[in-house]
Image (cartoon, rainbow, N blue to C red):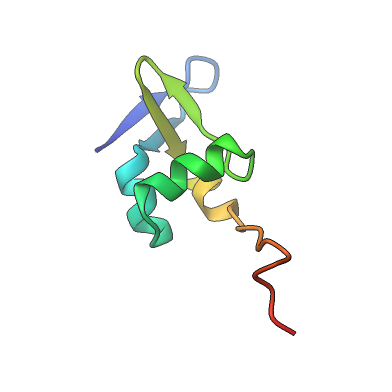
Length: 72
């Protein structure tokens, strides 16, 4: 589910995406999105009981590959 917020200070509309939509955009499971957020790799905003991400936050996301997974 996505929705649009209007910024009070600049009147810009900001589209927000939930965990499921963010997972679809990143092509990962929603649980991975939660994990990225928990470990500080993906910024997000908590609104009431949900976690939401902007298109800018999703676009700037670069997953960190653990050293034991890296290939030579």
